Image 1 (tube, rainbow, N blue to C red):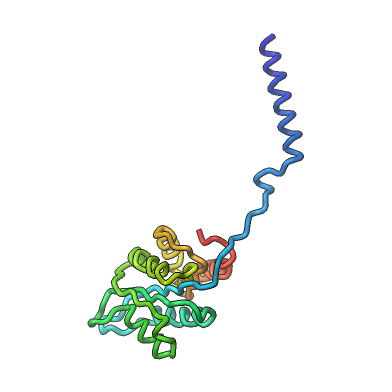
Image 2: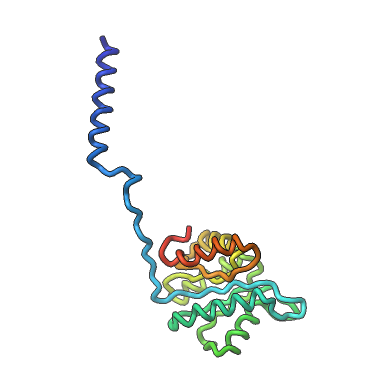
Length: 192
């Protein structure tokens, strides 16, 4: 007799669950919330790339600087953080980036130089506090498409508020397409 009551109770509970389920939206039907991002004063962070032994910039680094400069034109109130140590012939990646930006007419007072980092982890570790000290609303990260996923993850792990990522195509064309879509979507979604 107890078994029948128990079976009947389970059947009633399941019936109630089905009926209630028809009238309340399930998690799968819920609409995702859009990411709210504050682009009022982002820091544009340009990641370094190894210099030639004589201290000159490699093409990848020049392209990153040009991408960062393009982004900075849209945010005249924002600082640009150039990050990269690894000196070659007595000059760092950050110093070369600063030099190129100023040669192209970018205002020196908007450039913050971080010239101690020797890795992506250190780029993030040293740049995130600089962005916070400059009272920015978040970070727009500038790198290469083959480096973007690692850079995004590393900066987020260091507590960065990544607003968007801009990457210059390099290496694998399939990676470039995926990263291009990511770049286009990053201002509207949470990066990670």
